[in-house]
Length: 159
Image (cartoon, rainbow, N blue to C red; front, side, top):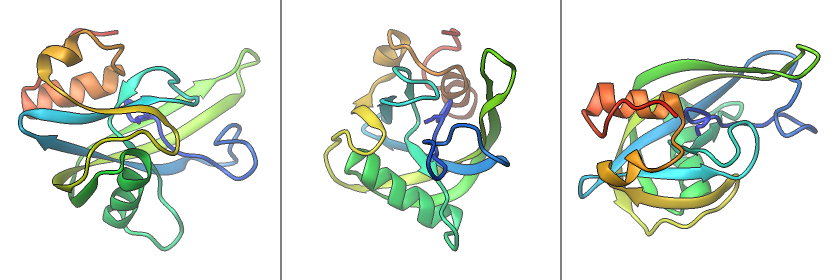
């Protein structure tokens, strides 16, 4: 994420691009020692931006199961996923105004259980980030807003 803010997800054959319908994705907001777990997106959408980690919900998964699976795949961190805390859309159009990506993203609160951050899956980097460090990162605007409004974490500067 997301990112998408946690801009996550993928569809069969096109890495999430040009879907037939919106895709459901999850993110998990995890804190440990006053630092939040963030990933740098390694693939579109939002490639290169820092965001809440997460990804697509698979058929038959609850939001919590999807978040727990995606976070360990993307960051190596084991979590216990909680309740939804933030929901938003990510819709990106191409130069011909076709919908390239369309995600409905549900971010959940989560409890850190174990692990050391390591980038995996769609992430190029994974790290525990302090509020001060977050200020200097190219942070997805939805992530920045979520962290500031829900957790009073960092500022509300837009990137």
